[in-house]
Length: 449
Image (cartoon, rainbow, N blue to C red):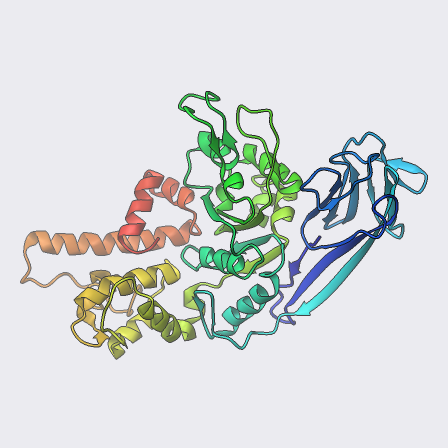
């Protein structure tokens, strides 16, 4: 079992704190049984699906669990029939300090913690399962992913829109023991509020209007694999306790059903919001945050790693979804790319490149292939090359001139709006007094989402 924390102080070495544990049966029918665990909660009992599965008939199906919290390691009894004991004392919940042996039924277990501090040394590689970068920040990310990918650790990925959070989650899945299992994505901000519970945990026929057939939720769909919870900061507060229970118990109950279904999933979550701030504001549960932020990976924005541009462009061109003869960027376009703010980050860069490919006649992407908003002669002030905003050429029609200006204005407005809203789509919609879905469509149209 594990809790991991990155020290983000740039003035000192960055480190990864890895904490795991070994549980060994010292006495009882399963004497000699041992297991090493690196996930958040370790469950003990006779039911199939427990981390430490015992055969002792005096042990309940879901007898006890051990959780590693920021405040210490906690042993909890799950209302077992014969109790959980530390020494002669029957306990319901207790911190495991110097006393590292406890008893469930007739089985005595020894708990042995393992703490490891790993310096985050930038990896030597410049790509990792679809991610590319030679900057120190990205190579540090690769180093962390190399270490935590093969584990069962829960990972929280933070970063602005378009920085590659889903790519990181897929990389973690591909480098894990679950790589042959399902990989399921759930966007917490893209589902209607009243349907989130059903989508996450499933429902039975007739449990609500429109439930015409039983349906497995995304946790059941991800059984044996990895679930990626995107835009976690958008999860309604009232549903956060249910998600916490799934993370702790690794079992779900469908809406309208009494049956408990065990699930075996690794959880990777992502957010473009500051969850610590949301916790302080009472809008996100602290205990859920600690369950999810076992390992925190922060993806830097593209504007902070401009040395990665050549490598990323090369990677995106090589992996374009259609054939082309383009080899790279003209010097003028390369300079515009260096000057652009890139509020949509790598996703925006990819959209711009893919749009430019069909309009490129030679081996290089030139100015004429770029969207109007990126060209120096029509770009808003300070957004691309720093030149002043110029009206369209007088030779175009009124409609064409108007469309160019509106397109430039809309893109500039959206970039400024997303900066002011800290890339939070719901907040942006409120500031603009526009429907959230409309903002989303506008961002996609301009390659910013």
